[in-house]
Amino acid sequence: MCGIIGYVGEKEAAPILIEGIKKLEYRGYDSSGIGIIAPVNSHIAIRKTPGKIQDLVNLIRGHNLPKGTVGISHTRWATHGAPTRANAHPHFDNKNEILIVHNGIIENYQMLKGLLIKKGHEFESETDSEIIAHLIEDHFHDDLLSAVRLAMQKLKGSFAIGVISNHCPDTLIAARLGSPLIIGVGEHENFIASDVPAILDRTRKVIYLKDGEIACLKKNSIKIINFAGKEISPKIQEVTFNIEAVQKQGFPHFMLKEIHEQEDVLKQMLSTRIKGTKIQLEGVGLAEKELRSINQIVIVACGTAYHAGMVGKYIIEQLSSIPVITDLSSEFRYRNPILGKNCLVIAISQSGETADTLAAVKEAKAKGAKIVSICNVVGSSLTRESDGVLYTHAGPEIGVASTKAYTAQLCMLYLLAIKLGLIKKAISENDAKKFIKDLRQIPSLYAKLLKAKQSIAKIAKENSHFGCFLYLGRNINFPSALEGALKLKEISYIPAEGYAAGEMKHGPIALIDEYRAVVCIAPQSDTYDKMISNMQEIMARKGKIIAIASQGDKTIQQHTSHVIYIPPTNKLLTPLLVAIPLQLMAYYIAVNRGCDVDQPRNLAKSVTVE
Ligand code: AGP
Image (cartoon, rainbow, N blue to C red; front, side, top):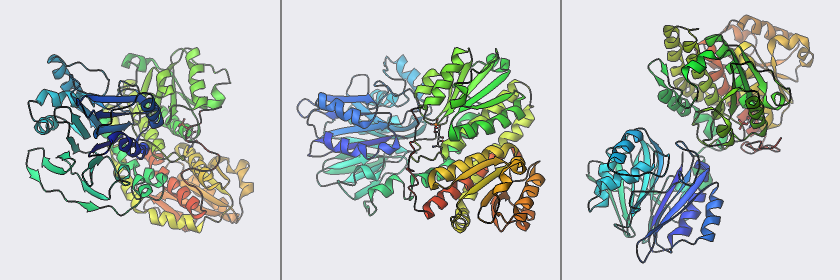
């Protein structure tokens, strides 16, 4: 997800664009850039740089931009190509006469790039976006709007673009398909932006461009056509909400917004990485022969990513029969680990900047291991240290408590487990097909779970007063218990402990009394009866139980009235579903306690220090 903005009017464009792009930083912040048409000779000047938008501001301070009144700007969340100057937007065409910014993913860019190279086009970046400028140039004769329209018809994927050119220095063109884009309507000035916050200080009159539409803006005119060339009469609306609300798209907190984004994140991952029964792990960096030779896997990570790795252990062992060890990065790096000859180390990290995990990877490489990282930030330090990278593309995760990154990591581990299982012939094509079918259901089951969020909010409210929580799970949901406890403690500051339920009698049962809430994760599984026994032991000691169970399970109601149901699914997939009620429960309890959900005390989004 990236942020784009454009301006055409009577004022100096650069300050307006920089002010606006700062308000889109939550959409992506690994590199940024700006392009302005000079007022005298219509030369297009650009400045772009990796890093935060402040780095761009500093760059411009040192190298002034022309005081032109037409320009575009962009803040990037890298998908194709690391955050470098060359990959930052805006991007020029071959002759530096057409400049574009883009948000989205062009799925057929390699094919188009090949055709354009054959026509003599030269490219600077690794991005998919750059081909858009060259494609427009390839269709340009004397009318920029028509060139844009013809080029848009060739693109497959999702895009919202801004275009300026010295062929028509008084014009700003925008087009969208699948990515958001709005037009801001001003007095002798007009704007385009990915989202309303970017222009709310300038105007509250907006036009929400629809998929398949193109806008041609001048300072005193707005023309909208569709990709077929038919003119469309613009519908101007008044924006009534404030900036913060828009960045959270109406959710009260980024965390709740990101919990709701999990359905789309998994939908996109499954659709791009599963073709039939083929699992496409482009980026894994190891040939099938190397994957086949793996006889030991070590997963290193911290915090929530470590819990994902623990689930990954169960899954990879079940589906591929490869032995898996999970280790906290902060432990692995100091324990002089023994790694076999054909050992694969999987490093999991949302940020790709966690100091302990970076150090663990360095230790593993020093011992000769191959490294594959599962990461959410393109071009982050961890990805540069890895032999292969499986990007989760979950988009920026702003809330400190990891939610969509966690389930995206889980989903990637399921895909990797299936791939390894097929390569090792530990599972049949038919088993894989059945498992993939179940996995594909998960996003729609998220929608069902999120529809029930008010009942989870009610249970959370009724249990917010407890001063201590114990989370219990078994087997593949033991990591879910640890993750549920971490979610609660890090945003509500309530002491919460995750435990393997089988361990209860070895100590934690001493904690049980009527002042303690015990979350029992008990979906249908081979250890369900054992979980029921645990619940009986807890009830006998007046413990208060909140159960997470499979839809249709009536037995569980004999042990507690606080039951959160998850839809039925493959037993190996329950951690993906259980995550949602655990996230929502922690969220609602923290909100009930008036905590700063998105920026909890003492925590940082990325722990880049030891
Ligand atoms: C999880 O909610 C926490 N924010 C924290 O435990 C986090 O998972 C951990 O710091 C690892 O971060 P990473 O995934 O960026 O490496």
